[in-house]
Structure formats: C-alpha cells, structure tokens
Image 1: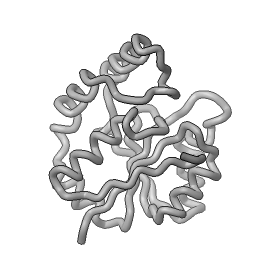
Image 2: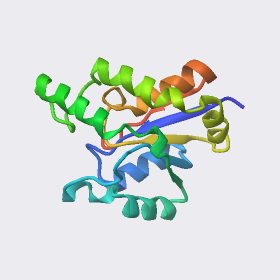
Image 3: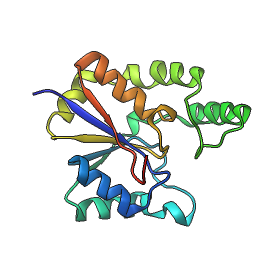
Image 4: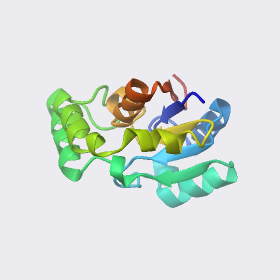
Length: 164
C-alpha cells in the first residue's frame, strides 16, 4: 500500500476550519510533532492539546503526540533568532532557517527510524503531521514529510485550513 501523509498547521484557521479541512481531505489520524502542545492567545486556544484532542475525538480522528519528532528548545531558539534577523515572527515565518533545518535533520530526524515510522503511518488511510505554522515550508513537519517521501516514496499533501 502506497504511503500518503498530510501536513497541517494552526495559524490562520479557526478550530472549525481546521477540523473541516481534516475531514475534507480524509485525514483519519493526527500526529502532533510539537514540543509544547499549547498555543498562546485566545484565537488559537482550540489548538491546545486537551481541546484539540476532544475536537478530533468528536470528529472520529485519531491523535498521537510524537515528542521524538519535536525540535528541542535550543533548536527553537535558533529559529527564533533567524526570524528576528529576517524581521519575521513565528506566525508570519515563510521559510525555515537553513542552519535550523540542517540541525533538525542531524539532531532529531536522523535518530528516528523512518522505516518504523512509515510502517506505523501505513496503519492509517491519511495521517497528518501537525504543528502550528500555517505553511509547511516554515515548519519542521515539512522535513519529516520530505524524509518519508525521499526514503519511502510517500505522497505528501499539504493542507492549509482557513483559505489558501
């Protein structure tokens, strides 16, 4: 069976739009790759772990947290410094800093057995890697998806709830 994975973020969407996008795409399992499973501010309170898990359960979508795929605090701070230098904030970031991407792959992704991850994901019709950034190019979830595409031929679908 061919592996298909999706990616999805929080920013720019309401909770209802987020769940509707998962349903529209046929996502049956969300893989949370955040280090911290909370989002500051009332606009995105729906994405805090307990609320998100309840909404997913109501929609019949599975959930798992994969802290082994989350960036370390040190890596996050490196990206924040690059954001500051570029005049961007986390919510408006357009790309990952090259040093961040290189270190994430070396320090995090290379220690994960991609074959085992792919086998786990194949149990679902369409699992989605989830983090906060709207665009996958601005988030480490794109690096995880790219590894699965490169090593296991995964088809990657990037979802953007709340409009394009």
